[in-house]
Image (cartoon, rainbow, N blue to C red):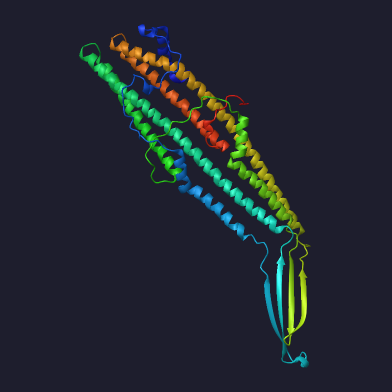
Length: 453
């Protein structure tokens, strides 16, 4: 982490610690240093960002209504729900009516006489078929519902990560705008010194060059901000987003939760795991359905014949198909569904392993970022501020050259940017943890520092 400051920054810090001028005799406070915008180092400035803050729940609501992929999954779920009443329980009975005229050559005794035959036919499903079909249809609804919720969970995670990235870019804009205003102050100081013959023209040129560099970097950051806003527009499916800036991410200060607890949370709340468990249940129901396919459907037929307008007979027919030639097909269907169940079980185990691996990595990321943030804020930031104050005072009194002052400012700038980077890394990891567990507001709980093995 110290390597990111740069060798020149370390050299300046070393000089500061060894003591340059009376300012270095000041005692370094043990309390964490205040945030940059709260110090007298920077003049008041306008960062150019909107005043209102984005609401992640409001953005998710927009996505739930407008995101095309989410709408397609919701339609699929509603289609499966609409098929439930269509499951055929008992087929409708069939009414048949027949009239026959007996020809005279067949029996002269009944010439010009006929009979009427009326019948009702009812098909009965084989034993266990209807409950198995209903179970398969209900579990299909559950699977599609959980897939919809999983995509919603993924959208929320992507929105949160985009907001964290937006916070990262906007924080860099704020920091560099502050240093740009500080450069404006240094330009005025250099001009005053040059006008009275105590400074050099290269000092002014160097300061103006630094300001131009800040303008270029700020232009790039504003471009990055536009790209993130375009990503948010795509995720929410909205043509226009309300004006806003990123909210400040929650920052964990206590560390108690373990990976084991988060794995239990994922088992309880992650929609993906619910969907895969429902897939296993559906595969079991399809096995039961395949096992009932050779249960014969029974057909009952009741017929009454009328001759000369008087009842002449009543007949009951029972038809039962004999599964002699399709036994192998029925057996193959059962084997196929058993393989589908094994596949669903393997997918569930794979998902659990990926969640466990992801949680382990993100917990390490949170722990590392938290430690780096604390070290940088409580030690390096304090020293860099003292170094810059001392360098500025020494330059104004003619005891320090301008290049050393700019170097001190770069050191302070890099440390402030490092704080933003560590906070961003931690917040991105928190968003990933929420996505992996399927439980929103994980960031409100203490985050783990033990139990990472």
